[in-house]
Length: 305
Image (cartoon, rainbow, N blue to C red; front, top):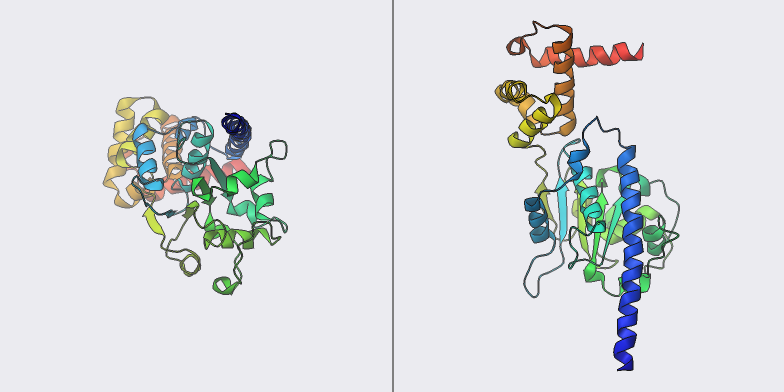
């Protein structure tokens, strides 16, 4: 009876630690999000549809006994939404909306920040942003199959030339350059049972091939045609205007594919809206991709004067 009570007390304590960690993780991610120069009204991009949640659950936590831990690589060109997706995965876990029964801890690691860090241990790397909310590392590390590492922006890492020939490291208390620790984590030398979600521009790079064991590479499609239509409507607040823009973009194959990136959608919309405001007689069908980009760069240059 006493042993049962002690187990319940320990479980309650772990839940308290995890709750505090969630609060700190959420605050950190929202602060990072606020520092991204999103155009106005882009807050809706933080949200997930239930279908997207279900797809992520199937992807990262397959059902069935004996399912192996996975290394998932999400890849796509710049601006297509890789970092947005990576941050949303961690944020929605912290908010209690995703992976509640799958992962006890989700760690978001930005390769952009890691490359500038000093030597540290894996414990230091994971807890550097939560000094006032100590993670019970021993408990977390004792169940590595319940850990998810979201490693964002692999292409931003500065890798040594002999990346595939570093001596192995299995001690999470060993002090090393932060980038080296991340390499050992990617190679599954540290916490081999953990799940990795990696974002990068090119999943076929030689560096990744030397590091990852049996990765599952999936492209990030960015905005679909339906997403573009929703974006145009949110921007112009007029269904007819949005439909006209959507049809015009769809007829230009290169521009249509470029608009899979939210930032390109914003560029197109802001340029068209600016020209419509300046010229009431503006005719969309006469607009070319070249004139659109020329208008954009012209407005940028005028703003710098």
